[in-house]
Image (cartoon, rainbow, N blue to C red; front, side, top):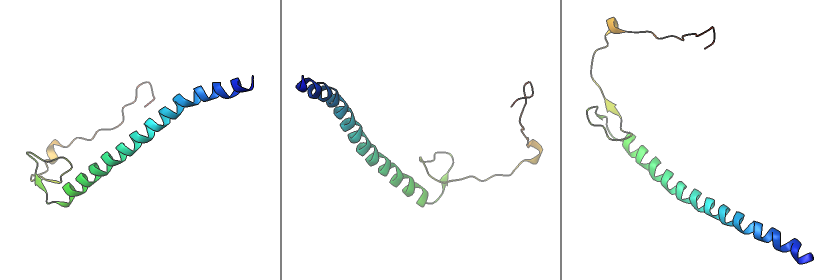
Length: 84
């Protein structure tokens, strides 16, 4: 009887242990991916602005133009049945 109290929780704990180890490994891999992504972001933003025609991901772009006030449009909140 005493061994049954030990065996059943052990069998239940083994799958939970496997899941927790898998999630821990996933977190470590995710940390490496995130670090590489942040380094790529920092490198792209440290460079000079590039043309907006074909920008690299995360790069600063430079756009030249003139603001057309005659085409300006102000959008506000619309209410339907007096609720946003």
